[in-house]
Image 1 (cartoon, chains in turn orange, blue):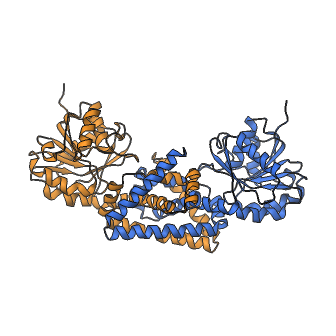
Image 2 (image 1 turned 60 degrees about the vertical axis):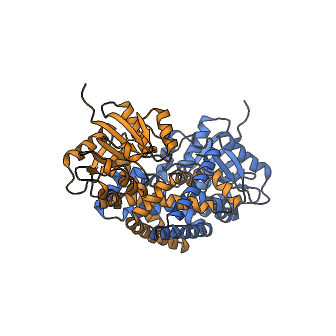
Length: 295
Length: 295
């Protein structure tokens, strides 16, 4: 029997992504020899052991990473600095630390200072998820056919990057290497703005007079429903994403608002040609997405 | 054999909705004895006959409604006044005219003046659709399990309303009667604003620098993709909806913009509690939609 890709793995944070990875390790023994779960919540630790998706689980994050060859941080981004401070001194020489956060510049800023020399930090971001949260929400197929972006800082050990890349490939993802700032700008558009807009529109509906609100729910299938699914994602995770990708998100909100204002004006003044021209243009980008097999 | 619900039906406009209804009539002979298609486009008429979803098809709208017991207008709302003017003098006494438009006050305004006394006008709106358009896009199951809203003006013949309601029930829809102005306000929130936002965000992405745009397409699965589907809907249909539900749409855009500005400010000033509170609140409306079996 060949040895696993990583003899000992610790996953910190057993939410949707962390518990999905734990399930990947369970179904494919070639990935990890031994999997430990570290989570600040005793309830989550208990549940992880009940589900049988890790061999050990502890709320003591420092202890959880002792001897680990790979540590995967899968907590909300706002908790990264604390987690990194808690585990830094317990990491073994040559360990690889990676993460799954949706923002990458802030992660490098918060985590790197706490890691001792000889530990390799390979920030990562699987472009995968659902609107569900917690250790019960995960599933091993989550990463199949999806992208995973790695954003190693300059000078990162190439072999460490390659081992993390290999892990993602084996759970079914396609790899992409990107500069952290570029990642944050792309994701601000493809993910952070859409989520913010969805949260906003659902919030606007929540503030409606009560009789109107019940009708909005009944007739939600006409477009609104798609936004509510996105706006049901984990609140703490998203709070931290917006706080930690502030510049890129504010820049894209600004562009969006300008464009919305232009449409609002066209509606007010009855400028049908302006509306039709935009609505025709947006059809072509949908076609590109279908052609790129991302639909 | 019992006689059909409507001996002679004419559908004007054989797009997604019109051609779906035509297919309903084909699969359930109890609905209509004879189905005529009226469409300004000769190509659409030819295609309708090729598809075998109507017994006759003509670009002469006046001729198409001769002898019809039911006329269904399924064209973009901006064409309603012209269509009503073209068919008015050809409608037989006692004929019922209905429609499928997403705005109802403007429809009553544009259509009613052209209809002779003795013709019953029962405006309707099936809450159903896809992002695809044209006579090939339709399918008979489109209305199954969906809502259909009727907005008969005060004084409309009750028997005529009931026959139109029965048609929608038989194609699988659940009926709702609503005042036209109320319909327009509810739909501005559940449908028109979501579409406008989706068109805007996709437009914002379309304007990006080219290298960024290709990455937006590649990584669209992280949220953006859901918006592109909505923003691929028929441009002319949507242009006409916004132009004809101006007041309600402008009012809800205004509320939305205020809410987005508040979130933008919270991000700028790092007010995590404001963000988390909203993101938690929006989760409950998703739960309501799931409970209402509209998810």
